[in-house]
Image (cartoon, rainbow, N blue to C red; front, side):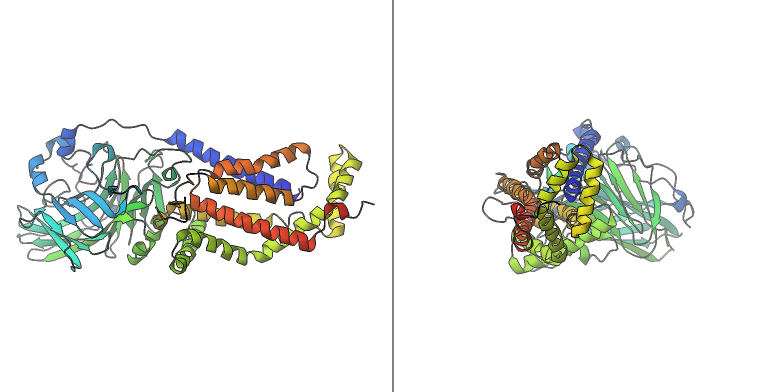
Length: 570
């Protein structure tokens, strides 16, 4: 099989795969759920059962988990007015949050506007809006006494209800407290640091009673699955949306599939974490300590849930014990994620479900970020990345273009063979392979660089889709957001022209008229497909193609000769 036919098959397979993926997303899109009543939201609607049901892992623990379910939403022990009275607001240089001790109810990312328009409101992750319900929750369960859950129990430790990070201040703490009837007190402290999206949450259990107290802390994320606009014009539709967790390996579940299709999860993990991912942003509970916790997922009526249940904690009378965790709520900034020092958390930047492509994506972003440090512009950094990739792959591409030059040189002889054997394709193929062997032409020599570049292209695609660092990042002129499509389709048109000229330089030995017509349409097919890709990706592909075209022209001039001068067939 000649290299042109291989390229044609690969190209059509890629187009067909992308179209099939898009069709699958349309079919899997969830139907909009009914809007809950506003009165239910005020009373704590959209909140799942506070007490996790015991699983095999919990049953083996020293402290059994109670089997009783949490009170129904309508029977919440704390009135809505009391719940609102316990809410506090916290403002730092990067976050604005509303919390009530057991839940973080609202989170605005002050450094990330929703659009590029002046005065645009910041991106909101956690929300009590019934259409976009999303919260981080944490409470306790006890095997032998009372305990606070995320719906009620914790109250502010003081009269202050508004906290702000003052000028020159590095951190601010927000204290809450729960007092049990049996003399057990739990003091919860949220610590917010300047420039940080990770909130430290410390629970200190003080047993002032006369008998031992045993309990487990749970932390969970719950949200109503978002309705995402599907199609090539929506970058969000290409990004992973769902729950993720780490139990020694990276795991995830999509919202737009049956969340429990592969069954419930009940997995013990040491140094594990849970998260909910979306395009450019995510939230995660990261428990501290080396004690294993139990990770589970569920799908109550109010949304999809992922939960981490901590190891049993026993506190003797007069003793004190504590447990810590971090709540990350913010953008997928690689620098901030690495600063957490948590195994596997870098996979929250979901370059791919497959580890090989994810590692390749991390490497490409590392190069991009260093180029950005030198050039100060993400667009020029993408062009710099193309130059580096071209330099590394020069030996392969040089062999490719030499092969093209030789095949172009012997094109008249191949045409004569085709005319000689007519419709006998088998004899024609045998004669053509003998010619290749005699003249030492490798028809597959031009395919290897294409195959090698495909993983780089796919990995870079996810890097450009996922990297929040490139969000709203301009290049030049009309390109003001490298993660959105080219608004005037200038780059896709240039890409069509580059592909067309490249096609004219490439030989097509033995190709019948129908195949030639199909090949003529390939630049247009790719142009239409890439018209809705992120502008940064099209910039990469245009630069790569333009440099390849220039290199191919030079190699043809150096190693080939016009087809009319080729030796006649004997």
